[in-house]
Image (cartoon, rainbow, N blue to C red; front, side, top):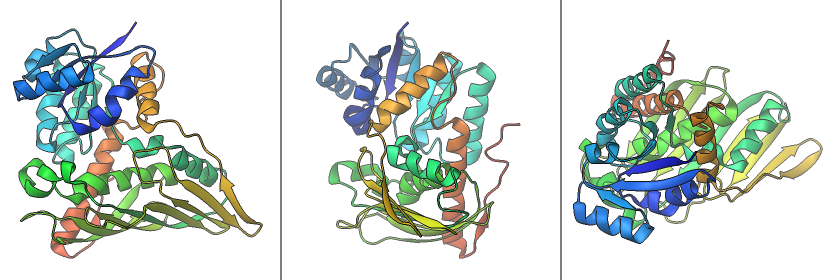
Length: 338
Protein backbone atom coordinates (compact mmCIF):
# COMPACT_ATOMS: atom_id res chain seq x y z
CA UNK A 1 0.00 0.00 0.00
CA UNK A 2 1.46 3.37 -0.97
CA UNK A 3 1.46 6.48 1.20
CA UNK A 4 0.16 9.37 -0.90
CA UNK A 5 1.44 12.75 0.29
CA UNK A 6 0.02 16.22 -0.12
CA UNK A 7 2.37 19.17 0.29
CA UNK A 8 0.91 22.16 2.14
CA UNK A 9 3.28 24.85 0.93
CA UNK A 10 5.24 25.00 -2.34
CA UNK A 11 8.45 25.46 -0.39
CA UNK A 12 12.18 25.42 -1.04
CA UNK A 13 12.76 22.73 1.60
CA UNK A 14 10.20 20.44 -0.01
CA UNK A 15 11.81 20.95 -3.41
CA UNK A 16 15.38 20.46 -2.16
CA UNK A 17 14.85 17.60 0.28
CA UNK A 18 11.36 16.33 1.08
CA UNK A 19 10.03 15.39 -2.35
CA UNK A 20 13.10 13.22 -2.99
CA UNK A 21 12.87 11.72 0.52
CA UNK A 22 9.23 10.74 -0.05
CA UNK A 23 10.03 9.22 -3.44
CA UNK A 24 12.99 7.34 -1.94
CA UNK A 25 10.47 5.22 0.02
CA UNK A 26 9.26 2.11 -1.77
CA UNK A 27 5.71 3.08 -0.78
CA UNK A 28 6.02 6.88 -1.09
CA UNK A 29 4.26 9.09 -3.60
CA UNK A 30 3.81 12.88 -3.88
CA UNK A 31 0.23 13.26 -5.09
CA UNK A 32 -0.56 16.97 -4.76
CA UNK A 33 0.80 20.37 -3.79
CA UNK A 34 -1.04 23.38 -2.37
CA UNK A 35 0.00 27.02 -2.62
CA UNK A 36 -2.31 29.94 -1.94
CA UNK A 37 -1.02 31.33 -5.26
CA UNK A 38 -2.62 29.16 -7.98
CA UNK A 39 0.04 30.03 -10.56
CA UNK A 40 2.83 29.15 -8.15
CA UNK A 41 1.11 25.85 -7.31
CA UNK A 42 0.81 24.99 -11.01
CA UNK A 43 4.40 25.92 -11.83
CA UNK A 44 5.75 24.06 -8.78
CA UNK A 45 3.78 20.91 -9.65
CA UNK A 46 5.05 21.05 -13.23
CA UNK A 47 8.69 21.56 -12.19
CA UNK A 48 8.58 18.71 -9.67
CA UNK A 49 6.41 16.18 -11.50
CA UNK A 50 3.50 16.39 -9.04
CA UNK A 51 0.15 15.33 -10.55
CA UNK A 52 -2.18 17.81 -8.83
CA UNK A 53 -1.89 21.51 -7.93
CA UNK A 54 -4.46 23.25 -5.74
CA UNK A 55 -4.73 26.64 -4.03
CA UNK A 56 -6.67 25.86 -0.83
CA UNK A 57 -6.08 23.50 2.08
CA UNK A 58 -9.64 22.19 1.72
CA UNK A 59 -8.99 21.21 -1.88
CA UNK A 60 -5.79 19.42 -0.90
CA UNK A 61 -7.44 17.56 1.98
CA UNK A 62 -10.27 16.55 -0.36
CA UNK A 63 -7.79 14.90 -2.72
CA UNK A 64 -6.80 11.24 -2.56
CA UNK A 65 -3.97 11.58 -0.03
CA UNK A 66 -2.96 9.83 3.20
CA UNK A 67 -0.55 12.32 4.77
CA UNK A 68 0.46 15.97 4.58
CA UNK A 69 3.79 17.73 4.92
CA UNK A 70 3.33 21.30 6.20
CA UNK A 71 6.07 23.80 5.32
CA UNK A 72 4.19 27.09 5.17
CA UNK A 73 5.12 30.12 7.29
CA UNK A 74 4.97 29.43 11.01
CA UNK A 75 1.76 31.30 11.84
CA UNK A 76 -0.23 29.02 9.48
CA UNK A 77 0.86 25.66 10.95
CA UNK A 78 -1.78 25.44 13.68
CA UNK A 79 -4.84 26.02 11.51
CA UNK A 80 -3.54 23.84 8.68
CA UNK A 81 -2.43 21.06 11.02
CA UNK A 82 -5.79 20.95 12.82
CA UNK A 83 -7.63 20.86 9.48
CA UNK A 84 -5.49 17.94 8.28
CA UNK A 85 -6.06 16.03 11.53
CA UNK A 86 -9.80 16.62 11.29
CA UNK A 87 -9.68 15.25 7.73
CA UNK A 88 -7.95 12.09 9.01
CA UNK A 89 -4.57 12.76 7.40
CA UNK A 90 -1.24 11.95 9.04
CA UNK A 91 0.85 15.08 9.62
CA UNK A 92 4.56 15.83 9.34
CA UNK A 93 4.97 19.49 10.28
CA UNK A 94 7.93 21.81 9.98
CA UNK A 95 9.31 23.36 13.12
CA UNK A 96 8.27 25.32 15.05
CA UNK A 97 4.93 23.53 15.23
CA UNK A 98 3.14 26.82 15.94
CA UNK A 99 3.81 30.29 17.33
CA UNK A 100 3.28 29.15 20.94
CA UNK A 101 3.84 25.87 22.75
CA UNK A 102 0.22 26.01 23.99
CA UNK A 103 -0.96 25.96 20.35
CA UNK A 104 1.50 23.20 19.52
CA UNK A 105 0.19 21.13 22.41
CA UNK A 106 -3.37 21.61 21.13
CA UNK A 107 -2.39 20.25 17.71
CA UNK A 108 -0.48 17.28 19.10
CA UNK A 109 -3.32 16.41 21.49
CA UNK A 110 -5.82 16.55 18.61
CA UNK A 111 -3.70 14.12 16.59
CA UNK A 112 -3.39 11.77 19.54
CA UNK A 113 -7.15 11.81 20.12
CA UNK A 114 -7.79 11.10 16.43
CA UNK A 115 -5.24 8.28 16.19
CA UNK A 116 -3.22 10.28 13.66
CA UNK A 117 0.55 9.92 13.27
CA UNK A 118 2.07 13.33 13.96
CA UNK A 119 5.73 14.21 13.57
CA UNK A 120 7.95 17.29 13.80
CA UNK A 121 10.46 17.72 10.97
CA UNK A 122 13.54 18.04 13.18
CA UNK A 123 16.03 16.71 10.66
CA UNK A 124 19.22 16.86 12.74
CA UNK A 125 18.39 13.92 15.00
CA UNK A 126 18.36 11.81 11.81
CA UNK A 127 22.02 12.60 11.12
CA UNK A 128 24.42 9.69 11.56
CA UNK A 129 26.81 12.04 13.37
CA UNK A 130 24.29 12.87 16.09
CA UNK A 131 23.20 9.27 16.49
CA UNK A 132 26.86 8.23 16.87
CA UNK A 133 27.30 10.87 19.60
CA UNK A 134 24.14 9.78 21.39
CA UNK A 135 25.24 6.12 21.29
CA UNK A 136 28.75 6.95 22.57
CA UNK A 137 27.31 8.92 25.50
CA UNK A 138 24.78 6.19 26.33
CA UNK A 139 27.59 3.59 26.25
CA UNK A 140 29.54 5.63 28.83
CA UNK A 141 32.44 6.38 26.49
CA UNK A 142 32.88 9.93 27.87
CA UNK A 143 31.92 9.05 31.43
CA UNK A 144 29.41 11.39 33.06
CA UNK A 145 28.38 14.22 30.69
CA UNK A 146 29.25 17.61 32.18
CA UNK A 147 28.90 20.28 29.48
CA UNK A 148 28.01 20.81 25.83
CA UNK A 149 28.56 23.48 23.18
CA UNK A 150 26.61 23.97 19.94
CA UNK A 151 27.86 26.16 17.10
CA UNK A 152 24.95 26.79 14.75
CA UNK A 153 25.43 30.27 13.38
CA UNK A 154 25.32 30.37 9.58
CA UNK A 155 24.62 32.82 6.78
CA UNK A 156 20.99 32.74 5.71
CA UNK A 157 21.02 32.63 1.88
CA UNK A 158 19.21 35.43 0.10
CA UNK A 159 16.53 33.13 -1.35
CA UNK A 160 15.53 32.08 2.20
CA UNK A 161 15.68 35.49 3.89
CA UNK A 162 12.21 36.87 3.11
CA UNK A 163 9.69 36.46 5.93
CA UNK A 164 12.30 35.02 8.32
CA UNK A 165 13.85 38.47 8.74
CA UNK A 166 10.93 40.79 7.97
CA UNK A 167 7.73 39.38 9.51
CA UNK A 168 7.48 39.03 13.30
CA UNK A 169 3.79 38.08 12.91
CA UNK A 170 4.77 35.07 10.79
CA UNK A 171 7.13 33.75 13.47
CA UNK A 172 10.34 35.06 11.92
CA UNK A 173 13.68 35.43 13.67
CA UNK A 174 16.61 33.14 14.37
CA UNK A 175 15.28 31.73 17.65
CA UNK A 176 12.14 30.17 16.14
CA UNK A 177 14.19 29.11 13.11
CA UNK A 178 17.40 27.69 14.59
CA UNK A 179 17.27 27.64 18.42
CA UNK A 180 14.39 25.14 18.14
CA UNK A 181 16.74 22.81 16.23
CA UNK A 182 19.49 23.20 18.81
CA UNK A 183 17.04 22.46 21.62
CA UNK A 184 15.95 19.27 19.90
CA UNK A 185 19.48 18.15 19.01
CA UNK A 186 20.74 18.75 22.55
CA UNK A 187 17.80 16.77 23.97
CA UNK A 188 18.38 13.93 21.51
CA UNK A 189 22.16 13.64 21.85
CA UNK A 190 22.22 14.03 25.64
CA UNK A 191 19.06 11.99 26.28
CA UNK A 192 18.15 14.75 28.71
CA UNK A 193 15.65 17.60 28.99
CA UNK A 194 16.42 21.31 29.54
CA UNK A 195 15.03 22.92 32.67
CA UNK A 196 16.34 26.49 32.45
CA UNK A 197 17.67 28.86 29.80
CA UNK A 198 19.24 32.28 29.71
CA UNK A 199 19.63 34.07 26.39
CA UNK A 200 20.90 37.18 24.67
CA UNK A 201 19.65 38.08 21.19
CA UNK A 202 20.96 40.64 18.71
CA UNK A 203 20.03 42.34 15.46
CA UNK A 204 23.31 42.48 13.58
CA UNK A 205 22.01 44.13 10.42
CA UNK A 206 20.07 41.48 8.52
CA UNK A 207 16.77 41.25 10.41
CA UNK A 208 14.15 43.98 10.24
CA UNK A 209 12.50 45.76 13.13
CA UNK A 210 11.29 43.57 15.97
CA UNK A 211 13.27 40.48 14.94
CA UNK A 212 16.59 38.97 16.01
CA UNK A 213 19.20 37.52 13.65
CA UNK A 214 21.58 36.20 16.32
CA UNK A 215 21.27 34.51 19.71
CA UNK A 216 23.48 33.03 22.40
CA UNK A 217 21.90 30.76 24.98
CA UNK A 218 23.03 29.08 28.19
CA UNK A 219 21.12 25.92 29.11
CA UNK A 220 20.80 23.82 32.24
CA UNK A 221 19.56 20.24 31.97
CA UNK A 222 17.84 17.92 34.45
CA UNK A 223 21.02 15.91 34.98
CA UNK A 224 23.02 19.03 35.80
CA UNK A 225 24.69 19.29 32.37
CA UNK A 226 25.22 22.91 31.30
CA UNK A 227 25.36 23.92 27.66
CA UNK A 228 25.90 26.94 25.46
CA UNK A 229 24.59 27.53 21.93
CA UNK A 230 25.12 30.18 19.27
CA UNK A 231 22.49 30.64 16.58
CA UNK A 232 22.76 33.19 13.79
CA UNK A 233 21.81 34.21 10.25
CA UNK A 234 24.69 36.63 9.73
CA UNK A 235 28.03 34.78 9.98
CA UNK A 236 29.30 34.03 6.47
CA UNK A 237 32.46 32.20 7.51
CA UNK A 238 31.55 30.33 10.70
CA UNK A 239 31.64 26.55 10.71
CA UNK A 240 29.08 24.52 12.64
CA UNK A 241 29.81 22.05 15.40
CA UNK A 242 28.65 20.23 18.50
CA UNK A 243 30.81 19.27 21.50
CA UNK A 244 29.94 17.21 24.56
CA UNK A 245 32.47 17.04 27.38
CA UNK A 246 32.35 14.36 30.06
CA UNK A 247 34.34 13.20 33.09
CA UNK A 248 36.27 10.64 31.04
CA UNK A 249 36.30 12.08 27.54
CA UNK A 250 35.03 14.55 24.96
CA UNK A 251 33.09 14.28 21.72
CA UNK A 252 34.03 16.94 19.18
CA UNK A 253 31.86 17.05 16.06
CA UNK A 254 32.46 19.47 13.21
CA UNK A 255 30.27 20.51 10.27
CA UNK A 256 27.31 18.54 11.63
CA UNK A 257 24.57 21.17 12.14
CA UNK A 258 23.49 20.88 8.54
CA UNK A 259 20.85 19.36 6.30
CA UNK A 260 23.38 17.09 4.61
CA UNK A 261 24.94 13.84 5.93
CA UNK A 262 28.43 15.27 6.32
CA UNK A 263 30.92 16.18 9.03
CA UNK A 264 33.03 14.23 11.50
CA UNK A 265 32.91 13.11 15.14
CA UNK A 266 36.08 12.78 17.19
CA UNK A 267 36.18 10.92 20.53
CA UNK A 268 39.06 12.11 22.73
CA UNK A 269 39.93 10.16 25.91
CA UNK A 270 42.98 9.21 27.98
CA UNK A 271 43.79 6.54 25.40
CA UNK A 272 43.96 9.05 22.55
CA UNK A 273 41.74 10.19 19.70
CA UNK A 274 39.34 8.08 17.66
CA UNK A 275 37.20 9.20 14.76
CA UNK A 276 33.77 7.61 15.06
CA UNK A 277 32.29 6.08 11.94
CA UNK A 278 28.62 6.67 11.17
CA UNK A 279 26.18 6.17 8.32
CA UNK A 280 25.80 8.88 5.68
CA UNK A 281 22.17 8.31 4.82
CA UNK A 282 20.16 11.36 3.76
CA UNK A 283 18.59 12.82 6.91
CA UNK A 284 15.15 13.35 5.39
CA UNK A 285 15.05 9.89 3.78
CA UNK A 286 15.62 8.36 7.20
CA UNK A 287 12.94 10.60 8.72
CA UNK A 288 10.40 9.57 6.07
CA UNK A 289 11.22 5.89 6.51
CA UNK A 290 10.44 6.12 10.23
CA UNK A 291 7.30 8.13 9.54
CA UNK A 292 6.01 5.51 7.06
CA UNK A 293 6.81 2.77 9.60
CA UNK A 294 4.81 4.69 12.22
CA UNK A 295 1.85 4.83 9.83
CA UNK A 296 2.08 1.02 9.59
CA UNK A 297 2.00 0.87 13.39
CA UNK A 298 5.73 0.22 13.77
CA UNK A 299 7.30 2.64 16.23
CA UNK A 300 6.98 6.41 16.04
CA UNK A 301 8.33 9.31 13.96
CA UNK A 302 11.98 10.15 14.57
CA UNK A 303 10.83 13.42 16.16
CA UNK A 304 7.36 13.25 17.66
CA UNK A 305 4.86 16.02 18.30
CA UNK A 306 5.97 16.02 21.93
CA UNK A 307 9.55 16.64 20.76
CA UNK A 308 8.24 19.63 18.79
CA UNK A 309 6.50 20.99 21.88
CA UNK A 310 9.74 20.72 23.87
CA UNK A 311 11.79 22.57 21.27
CA UNK A 312 9.22 25.35 20.89
CA UNK A 313 8.88 25.75 24.68
CA UNK A 314 12.67 26.07 24.85
CA UNK A 315 12.68 28.75 22.13
CA UNK A 316 9.87 30.63 23.87
CA UNK A 317 11.87 30.60 27.11
CA UNK A 318 14.94 31.90 25.24
CA UNK A 319 12.95 34.80 23.76
CA UNK A 320 11.43 35.59 27.15
CA UNK A 321 14.87 35.56 28.79
CA UNK A 322 16.31 37.87 26.13
CA UNK A 323 13.54 40.39 26.81
CA UNK A 324 13.59 40.25 30.62
CA UNK A 325 17.32 39.79 31.18
CA UNK A 326 16.57 36.89 33.54
CA UNK A 327 16.90 33.13 33.18
CA UNK A 328 13.62 31.34 32.49
CA UNK A 329 12.49 27.92 33.66
CA UNK A 330 11.18 25.53 30.99
CA UNK A 331 7.91 23.89 32.03
CA UNK A 332 8.50 20.09 32.09
CA UNK A 333 4.77 19.50 31.68
CA UNK A 334 4.72 21.07 28.22
CA UNK A 335 6.07 17.94 26.59
CA UNK A 336 3.50 15.74 28.34
CA UNK A 337 -0.02 15.18 27.05
CA UNK A 338 -1.10 13.26 30.13
